[in-house]
Every structure is written in structure tokens, then in C-alpha cells.
Image (cartoon, rainbow, N blue to C red; front, side, top):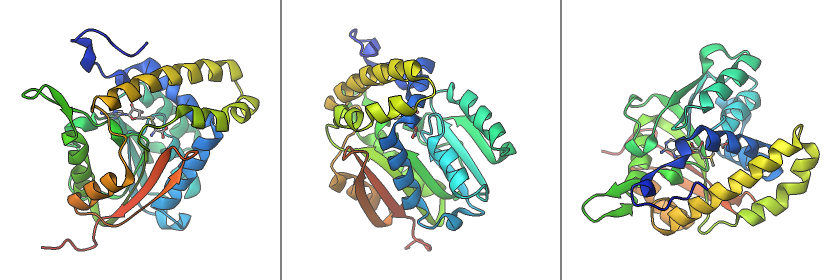
Amino acid sequence: MPATTTPTDERTNTWADAKCAKAFWSQSELPVFHALTADTLAAAYPDPSQAAGRQVLDLGCGGGTLTRGLWLRSNGTVAGILGVDCAEANAQRYEKFAAELNAGDRIRFEVVNFSHGLPTLADETFHGVVSGLSITYAEYFDEITQRWTQQAYDGLFHEVFRVLKPGGRFAFSVNVPNPSWWAVGLKSFFGALRSSPKPLRLLKNLNRMNRYGRWLKMEAARGRFHYLPAADVTAKLAAAGFVGIGHRLSYAGQAFVFHADKPATEAV
Ligand SMILES: C[S@@+](CC[C@H](N)C(=O)[O-])C[C@H]1O[C@@H](n2cnc3c(N)ncnc32)[C@H](O)[C@@H]1O
């Protein structure tokens, strides 16, 4: 079990483990996840031709579902996509599909722990930032109060705003409060098993994801991770300076897909 019991282990972040990263690669085989990916990419670039010539950041990219989807949807016309994630294991997956897509160094991966912000990324680097079910895991433990807080999550919205070019768009998904993994599983399970090239591996990974899912909900309950109402996410985006904020439900009703824009000219 990834859930931990001793006080020292209580802060271990399982997301960085290769086993966890690899289990979540199977998420891309779930039909509801395809729909979520399509909804997020449509929120980023309603018309696929809008991605042409754009530099895009994929935040908490995992195995690169959004990166790969964006590349294919833009017909390889996107200028470049940088995937960042705290789990180094995802680099293998990026190397493999970047080679398959003949993308050269236009698809890249870097290890970044976004709970510490995005310090290696310069201001106004990206035309767009996308993210799938990831930013909610930005964590900050306050040593004085001995509590988890939303400081890193709030800070990440400011960091995304900073690295976006004026007029750039942030499109991302986050789980709804108290998400039901059953709703996701039931909607997808049989279709995914039927179409999977390796159904046994899929079953093993679905079981693992379910166990990680229990850990995630337990941590969210004690304030470490943030499954928040849409109104709270909207308020955080607005506080970071975003405008034109909107959202819709996706992922069998278990995730919001948001879009928000950095003003073309920043107010002074
Ligand atoms: C549910 S998975 C989604 C992966 C990917 N976006 C996708 O759509 O397939 C959540 C991702 O967030 C990443 N993540 C969690 N906490 C992170 C952190 N502090 N810094 C960077 N990545 C993080 C995990 O490693 C994992 O790849």
C-alpha cells in the first residue's frame, strides 16, 4: 500500500516512485480518459490549427497523454512541448513516443517538482500551458502549524501565470471534491479491457491505481492535496491574474476542465 503509517513516512510522496508513474501510464487506455484528454485539448485550442507554432508546457505530464495528443491534434505543427513531472520514470516514455512521432527535440521531458514552483522556467516562455489531473497535488507542509496548507497550490497558479506569454492560455483538469474512482472505473472498465493490447497488465495497473487513489483521497482529506469546488479554483485563478475563466465537467463527472487566459497586456 502506498498509504503510510509512521510519522516520518507521512510526508513521503508516492507520485515520485517509478511504480506509481508506470501504473498511471495505463490511465490512457481508459475511454473516459480519452474524453478528458480531448476536452482539455479543445479547451486549450478550440481549433487545432491554433496550436501551430506554439510553445507549450505540460505540467505534471506523467506518461505524456496530453503532450502526445496535442502533437497529433496539431498534426506536428506545434513548435515544441515540454513535459514536466516529479517522476523521472516518465522520461523513458517521452523518449519512446517522441522517437515514434519523429519529433526530435520538439518534445522534451524534465523532472520538476512543482510544489516548489517552476524556478527553472523563465518568465513568458510558453504560449500555452496544459495539465491533466495533476496540479491538485502541489503540496506544502507548514512546519510552524504542523499542517498541510494550500500555499503551494496557490503559488503554482502564480507560477503558471508568470511562465505564460501575455495572451497565453492555461487549460487543465482537476478532480471534483471527493471524486468517485468507481464512477470512472465503471464507465470505462469493460471497454478498456476489450480494447487493451495487454488486458492482464491493464488489470494489474487498474488495481494499483485504485490503491493509489485511496491514498490520494486520504491525503486530500487531511488537506495535503486539493480536490476543490469549481468556485474555489476559479477564485485562485482570478487571484493569480487570469481572466476569461470557464470550466465544464468531464471524466464521468469526476473532473472539471478549466480554461483561463493571461491578459494580452497586463493591467498596471
Ligand atoms: C493522475 S497523474 C496524471 C498524469 C498526466 N497528466 C496524464 O494526463 O496522464 C498525476 C501526475 O501528477 C504528477 N505530480 C504529482 N505531484 C507532482 C509534483 N509535486 N510535481 C510534479 N509532478 C507531480 C504525478 O507524478 C503524475 O504524473
